[in-house]
Amino acid sequence: MQATLFWLTGGAFFALQLGMLLYLLYANPRDGLAAPEERRRRVEIIWTLVPASLLLAVICMVSGLTGSAATRSHACGDPSRVVALHGPDAARVHRDAAR
Amino acid sequence: MERSVALATPVSRIADYAELTKPRITLMVVLTTAAGYYLGADGSLDLVVLLHALLGTGVIASAASALNQVLERDSDARMLRTRHRPLPAGRMEVPAALGFGLVLMVLGTLYLAVAVNVLTAVVGFATLALYVGVYTPMKRRSSLCTIVGAVPGALPPVMGWTAATGALSAEAWVLFGVLFFWQLPHFLAIAWNYREDYARGGQPMLSVEDPRGGSTARQIVLYCMALLPVSLAPSLLSLTGSLYFYGALALGIAYLAAGLHAARERSHASAGLLLRVSVIYLPALLGLMTFDKVVP
Image (cartoon, chains in turn purple, red):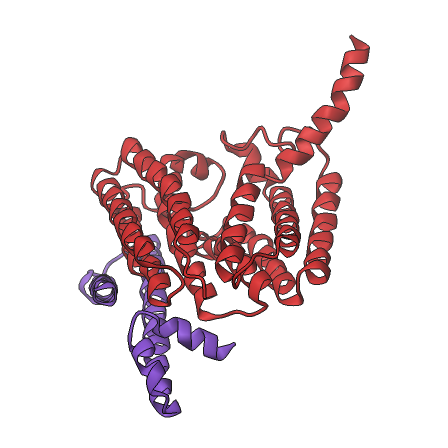
């Protein structure tokens, strides 16, 4: 349930941010804009790019950590850890293994 | 009469030095560092290391504030909100404030390196360098300074984490992300309500560059949206439990709702409400994090 909510909110909000970015890049009319307005448009593109890329980085990091923990459990061939590594404790076991 | 002035002078001098350190911001930095330390600590807390980390971080934060005020003394003098600070008000000389800031910077960095660990000292120095060396000069050039300034603002919990673990792990970066995303709607609300003051000070904040508020409104909503999933990540990384997860979800929805309201209304009152919600949000979230920490 928690993972589903994370992916849903993360995915939906990332899509909205991407949509805003594409709007600023392509849909917003650029021709004939005065220099200060064009500069403002560029600044807002950077403002929009930052949360989108950081959110993507966090999503990838969470995905990588929870995913790699499960993969490692199979590689180790330790059946007792498989349950933990597929459950909500996956990242913690991964963290402990890394220490 | 003369005696009372003579007695009051050292006291007011100390008060001016204290004001130079921006005590409320320093307290906030120390509290977020403590949260980072607690979350990073395995099992029992080493209170001595925690106290060293808090002291060193507090000294570095004070140094950053003092040096920031040295660099911004001219624009501070033009802004209603800041013109009573010790430097623009003429109660302190620049060399005294500069020396104070530099001494604190060296002391804080060395203290962290010796009493805590080198990594925390490096992160602490990087925080100060970004705040004073990049964010402060950028304030006169571009509204993007707000984003740059959010980086040092988000590093104190990372310093707490590195003080406890000696390493920069994924969990530390998630804490960084939470603090980073939280700050932007908070500061955009301040920038909206003080936009005339910022314009007077020659600081091109987003609300100054775009007086109709469209850009500010959009960015408030985008950063509130990004914060919500990032604030849920600690539970997915098994740093916190279910109570935190659902609490963070509720808080994130409230923050986003306040952000949407501010974006729609674009008024002093709605920005003030967003600011109040942001001030409640962060301690509540960090409180939940520490309360529902999963002990390894």
